[in-house]
Length: 402
Image 1 (spheres, one colour):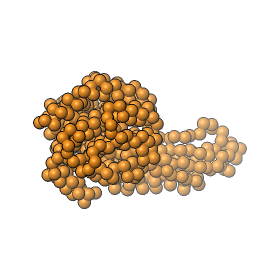
Image 2 (cartoon, one colour):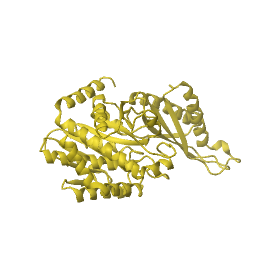
Image 3 (tube, helix red, strand yellow):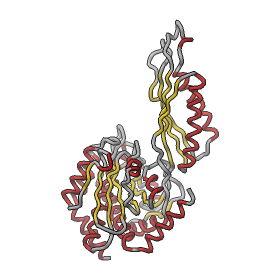
């Protein structure tokens, strides 16, 4: 196809510059909502290589940006994540996600201009996927209102994929999750002289811990509750007056996660009731489960095959993790394809080995193939009314199942 050749030539012309962009983000890891280097690096890259306007610090977020090309017609969104993990850098490969999003956006923008078709390409810099949910913030601010479909990829270790003879999976559900941060406030007193005058915040957290441990026996096999004590007493001769604990609640659907969260909340409240402590519970934004759009996944798989890579259309089991792209998939048809990269130890994301692998040239090269497949998926959605109709119909049917 002529458009494939034009796209390949355009991506090739960016060559080492895309590699340098990838490496700059990888070598300068930044945590959620603090991705200032990545934000400026990507925005400057876009401004240097295109005339498309770039809006820095968009939608009230200091490290979000937006760029849009084209003037009318359907709009294909691409997401660029770039936050890292504490202590282990880009161990989830968000440098690769950002590179793929930028490359796909620029490629589709080039095709729209070159062939003069109706359609728009849309790129969002989406901070804080690992902690906070930047896409949820952007959804609330209306950043996705102009988009008709949202596309992104995510790297994973290719070891298990090679056993299946594939390079990735186009469609795979994720599980929903959110956090509860609970603060117990008691009353300090001398632990030996007059302990009866105290209200013990450590006892409250121990009660809650035991309550939740017992609750685990009664939850479904696919559900998870995991927590940590964030603030604990440092001395033994005073009744503890303040403790903080945090629990993450996960279930396959957003609806079930909310229900499980209420049970965890009751366990936390019981700790306060039993000890007489005051209680404050803060909840983070809920990450929705990822809704798989089969026609969209099928088109991406077809486009990956054109790049010489076989990917599975839809996996039967969910990703054992969560993503704020799930929230996007509740609002509009969305893709979150998992693409394998070489990891010598076979380690999965959120490990030092995966961080190292995410910075290597081999990972960059396979991710550029995925970027091209995303761009061609976007092209098909803009030029094939029948395909877009199938994607939209699948989304509307799924809305009835939630």
